[in-house]
Image (cartoon, rainbow, N blue to C red):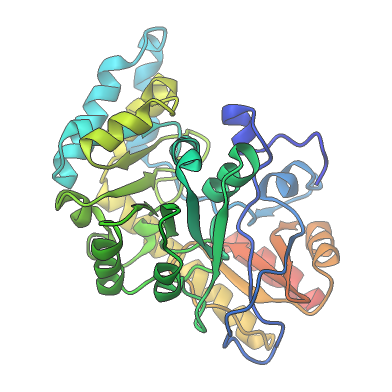
Length: 388
């Protein structure tokens, strides 16, 4: 990656480079049954470097897990309506959004932390917990929080390999907890694998473990699940457990460029983490208004989800017809093994108008494809068939 490439974390806080999801998976191409293996990961490119270095002819931007169907019409209209008053600080709009989220989720407003996307909340947790002890995470999983803790604040991070079906290994993670542990970080659904934990098992794990250490649950992709309410860990928060749940509007809501996110925790934890975060005051008036207007707009969300699933099923069919296996995904991206050097694969796809992500792990190159509009998926299919 070019040294002068400014990624999302640099944009928000001018700190170290953001390392996207890295992966520990087997090199066997004819099977997707993994055995837990030590980390041997080389991230070939990042989301941002792919986009910033993409050729002008890119027609299918499938490298950053964005939602090409959003934001909703309500959000767009709210942005237009808020422009005239955008010279004012949006204190009241931020309070309204906080209260709306709290009311819907059944928590107190003082338990809700707003931020410009979920990144500031991940970074706040990294800053706060790093001096307190080790951080346990899955491997592979989303690396923003653990990488910030390790590279920027000198924390020890314990990375636990996945299970045979590419899910976070809760049993192994629990065994790693000792007197030095400060935080357990769980991304569910997981990035980059797209796998989803059994809800009952995760809730039971959280109830046990939260009595010993804090748990940070990153639910960035939860809206892509058939029943987000059944999968969320917010019930554990409402029971008074030592749990932080982070959400973002960047995915199904289509707000990746608008930057709105939030976390819900116990009031004292929310107050503490708020000291380490830029907070809702760094969200623009237009973005706050858009989030307020579109929060829980179920008609739009279900329509975007339906389109995403259609595109994902199309991608599954393309991969199967070309003889490729893939990891079934509960998110808006799919990961599968490729039969050539990852960097070359990315370049060749780019020449054909498609941006994707590639990793190398365990002597095997892999591709992660974000789900786009159907015309973008067709562009991917046409390019993929030429070089697969």
